[in-house]
Image (cartoon, rainbow, N blue to C red; front, side, top):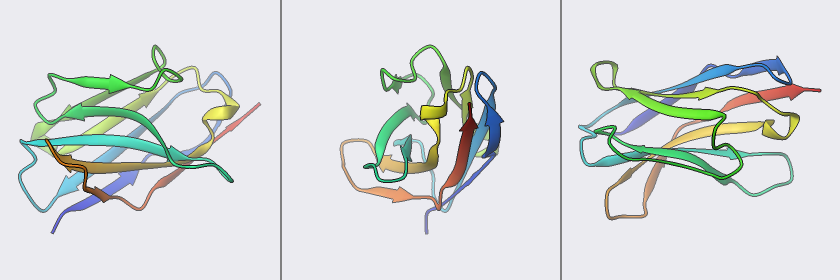
Length: 118
């Protein structure tokens, strides 16, 4: 059974940095994307970034390009989201999700709260 566990959220001032982690287990992820999404209060969940497990392909939402970096450590089965130059509008619950290449179904983690104060 696929398990995704996020960690690393917290409270940070605007301009600061956080690194989120997504520990993946339960299967081999070699044919999977790992995605980061976020959901702010009263808003729909939105895509943030994704990486294919090999690390050769990454994708970012325009709102985070140049500030966030997604990476993975295959040995630790962990995907990271380094978030720099944080803004109050980045405040949200951040979720990681796994999706097999060529499909739309995702397994989801429980989320981690990120709060950016102005």
